[in-house]
Image (cartoon, rainbow, N blue to C red; front, side):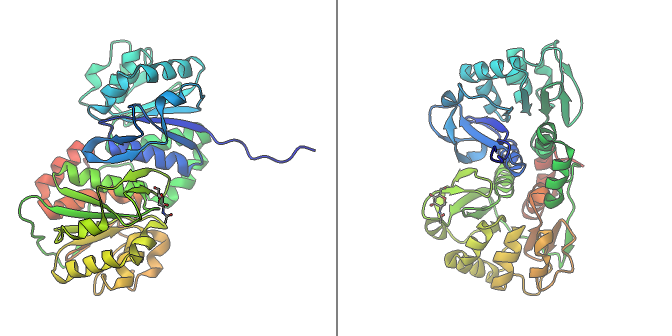
Length: 396
Ligand SMILES: *[C@@H]1O[C@H](CO)[C@@H](O)[C@H](O)[C@H]1NC(C)=O
């Protein structure tokens, strides 16, 4: 009798290159892995370590050249400037895509990548497609540009930009696994397809910040990549000086769904750069538990809080870093739905973003962009938040 075997996982190829947009890469990687896909992050450059946009450093799983012989169920191209054009100019990638499309494979691109990569190779001819509004005019006449967040036409799936990355990634999950899988994933993530943000604010105070805000974002193995990368990307778009610091033994951190993020510094070194204007702790398990056990980080946070400087956390980090160390004392906060019970005061946990004085908290990957824009609103003002939201295509 044959042994029962589980079906082999769907194979996904996601190339990255210098200038790839971090949110547009990390969200499909994370969400497709949540759905059970075997995602290979491949460097289209000549090294595994790739510095993508906003100084985010990612260690790819493989070089794209080593992926040419394999076959995939889906190939996804993130956008970015000049990332999308760099992908479009990569002959190895063009060869892989042509073979994949000829075999009837599912393929996808977001932001500038539909016009600058797929369409430049003629692979969207005769298709309806979308892309970043700044780049849709680059579609050739053979492509019908559609004004929608995500367009599925035949085997081609296209999306518009950072703010629609989650909707785009979930459309890919639906194509590979069906609607039920999408519902299963979105329930935990508090996904919302509309742009814009609001925050529940209590005990409103002005956050003081002179010049360029210096922000610390600590990172551990098992930190949630969508939360960490969305915050780093958004704050750097707002010109904050964001220092990503590893609390692990090395710079190279493996996030919750396997994204290898290379930190800027080790936490020791970051501590020498204190004081910061803001400290934000990303969620994800077991990352948040590791961060909560990191004495050096806790000491930094406590000193920072005593100096009345703003700090915050998202998801599991509210419950596992701020709460156990008294950093929410007398404050209302929010965390992921499953951890509300860990907060001494869970009365505002239903809110997606809560600001209480100097403390700003949020819930999950699905609220990370709202959170990042709200942080910029408090730190740099409403105009800067609006400019950021526009750049992310995250307007209400
Ligand atoms: C954390 O991840 C890195 C790879 O990113 C690995 O080398 C290291 O051993 C991991 N640390 C722990 C404590 O598992």
